[in-house]
Image (cartoon, rainbow, N blue to C red; front, side, top):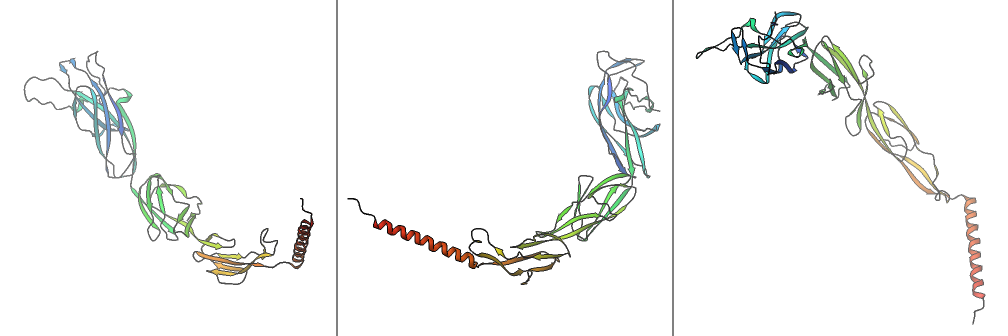
Length: 348
């Protein structure tokens, strides 16, 4: 049983406490593994006298007990000899059991007085039955640690490409040339697996996330691992089509057929169009060679095509006649005005 007696006497002018300041421990460990719990213990231990003993020095130790069985001492820390006030860092080394479970451990900050003996070379060994704690809430802490076996996450990406994978928000991995990844994880807990929605494979090639193999449509998922899991992921490859001179540029799914249609022949913008200038389709060049206005292109890779056009002058007859008449009339008016200016008498 954990000792629960208090110190026999104390100096009223000196504060008295033994408490756990900070505690650091793993929230999960694997079976049969060795792990540590680190503590900072703050203490103020006055000189005491009475009951056939007096002391100014104390043994200080952190001791770990099974929370459900207080008589079961699991481990204790190194032993320190302290006096007065201060802080001490202690660590407790424990071993996980060989089965998956939840460890509930209570860590006590415990002390034991050392009698003041007279004479040289006298040693005092702490007695197991003499360990004490202050009963204050800060003098002990209970922690829970999950003990689990390692499990494997096997990830397969289709098509086989390099995809960055983030697990639990900070662990980063990349699938291999076969689109596969195997990662060791802790079992009996949730893990968050995140994949990118877009993977740029080149300047003109990219992969878009479609779904997980079981149909789950989002790129981030939570999984509770009670054992090893194999998950598949589906991406689709897209190629870039660059079209010059006409509409149709964009990203298209691998294997899809794209229909390209050249613009109809038409007049240019004002003022060139008014005077008879028109843009006329000449044909397709690049990855498509054709004189047809409409062509189909299979997206089996990135493609570049050009819609070739030519500017031609085709003045309409009626508009040309009107323009010619306007020019003739304007010229006549200007000619008459110039002659009338020459006939005016000169002032003397």
